[in-house]
Image (cartoon, rainbow, N blue to C red; front, side, top):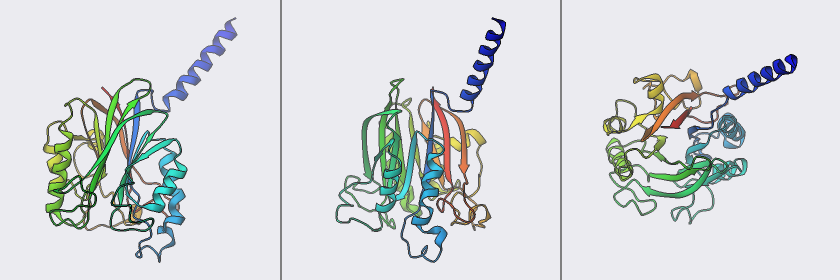
Length: 297
């Protein structure tokens, strides 16, 4: 009897230890991943940058971390098809649109911000998208001298077990014109403000802005908005996140992070980190991905 009890206690400790290594039932993991426009002439001379060569590393780097939500930027036809093929346990939203209908392949200066979320974890509630322009309902519209059309996609989901709802947004601001980024981020903040202050919202993306730039400072200044990596590691420059396929050896002119995970509402951040996986000189993308764990308060 005593041996049986000791064995039972030993097995219980092992089970609890195993559970401790994973995420708790009320915890969520999100990743923001700029996966790089595919088929660019600049990448062709470098085999390690070509999508067909790095796509398994790209998708594998994401899936092995078992995120509940994946926010992708710079998605076009071939990368979208491959993520859809490999991520069968996820629902994908945000690629199709009238601006894409004239084309069936290639890059036409619109890289989409696609959100994937776990079908097992979440029930779909609603979704939408808008363009970061003075005509936000018109696909591909541009304003403020933006270099190309930019947009924001969002999904609202419900946890199948707890019934709690939350909203995830995915964006990519202009890469050249600061005055455009100023207006683009204002549209996102204004749109999010229609929700209750305690409603959980998570905004991921490539902001093409560092801590000292207007877009990030504007978000920091808005009531209720915080950033997940900063919540864990404190304010201050965390170092570059776009690395031009050079990884940790990159020597940028401006050592700044431009990929962020902002949030507002009833959210408690548990962990946040850069994802710097690589195989030799091959990296999943020309950006490090950002991963964060959180729970709802």
